Every structure is written in structure tokens, then in C-alpha cells.
Length: 217
Ligand code: MD6
Ligand code: FE
Image 1 (cartoon, rainbow, N blue to C red):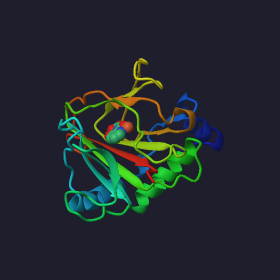
Image 2 (tube, helix red, strand yellow):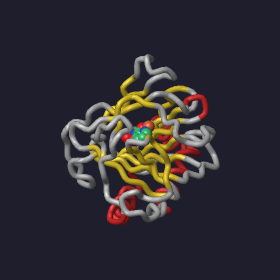
Image 3 (spheres, helix red, strand yellow):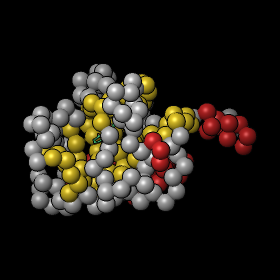
């Protein structure tokens, strides 16, 4: 079946959900590139394997992380920071693959943010039970660029909070291929991930993979 241009546009609109000014969910946006994304992930994690970071408070994060790009987000007992080298290897993080950069820029534009130039892709791997408590992304040098967050593999429930920790979050189910873009007035909203339920996906096995693109520096 082929859709007319009008139906195509209507379908596309239906797959875009605006949560609030500056925040959009793009349903299935990354799915057409899934094979190239997972191929690139294999190269990245061979050079910079997933690891469980320690929070400044001394807790082991349930989410395993790695990075690609000019900088990587890291956490240890001294705090959170962006670092140009992987502390595990002492080497620069793997470069950002074209398929990641193109996806991040297209999603940002679709969410209303042109000229997004991410210098970090934080890669998160969730197993059943892993979670991310409510937080703001505020380790970046400036907040004019949006955050682009790509969900892959088994589903999860995203907590979309307000500008204060006490604001009750809404729950947004995220499936393989869904992309969230938040910036502008929504840039410092609290957010998190509920404990991930057991599942299986043909590309990621028992995991949820999340790619979070930022402009850190
Ligand atoms: C997610 N991740 O996994 C969202 N923020 O869907 C984040 O919001 C996040 O994983 C800051 C640091 C690490 C993260
Ligand atoms: Fe975050």
C-alpha cells in the first residue's frame, strides 16, 4: 500500500507527541536505522565496554554506561563530569559514528531545534530492574542545546517531571525506536526511568539501550 502525501503527513503528525513547549516524543523515529545503530554500538563497546559507574555518594549505578564522541559523561567519588578520555582505558572515547550524528541532528530538527552539534553520546544499558532516579541534566556547560534521547530494545517507562523535584512526574511508555527531544523551556525538567521489566528484543536481547546526545562543552 502506498499513502498519498497527505496521508503520509497525517501519519507522521500522529507519531509526534508534544509533551509541553520544548519537549517532543518522536515515535519510531530511530527504527529505520536500527541495523546501522547496532552495528556501530558493537564497534564502540569493543573499544569502550559498558561499566557500572560509582555515584559521588558511593553507590554503584544499576545502569551500565559508556560513551562516544569528543567527551564522555562519567561519575566517581569526586563527582559527575565530562571527560575527553575514558578513565578505564586512558584513551579518547570512540568517535561519534555518522549514523548517530545524523539521527541526533534529524531528531533535534524535528523537535524544533536546528543546528544541534552534539559532542557527547552517552550510551546506557539497562537490564531488568535497572532504573534511573529523577534528576536534571545540568553538568553541561550551557543549556541552549537540547537533549536527544533514543530508546532501543526492551521498553521502559520514562518519568517526565517538572522544573522542581517535588513536581509529580507523568509516565511515558517508550518503545524501541522512540526518540525524546527536550530543550528550550523544557531543558532542565526533572526526568528518570522506572525499574525496567524483564523482556527480550531481537537486537538487544534482555536489555534496554538508550543513546543520549548532548552538547557538553
Ligand atoms: C534514559 N537517561 O536512559 C535517560 N541522564 O532514557 C538519562 O536521562 C541520563 O542516563 C543523565 C545521565 C545519565 C542518563
Ligand atoms: Fe538525564
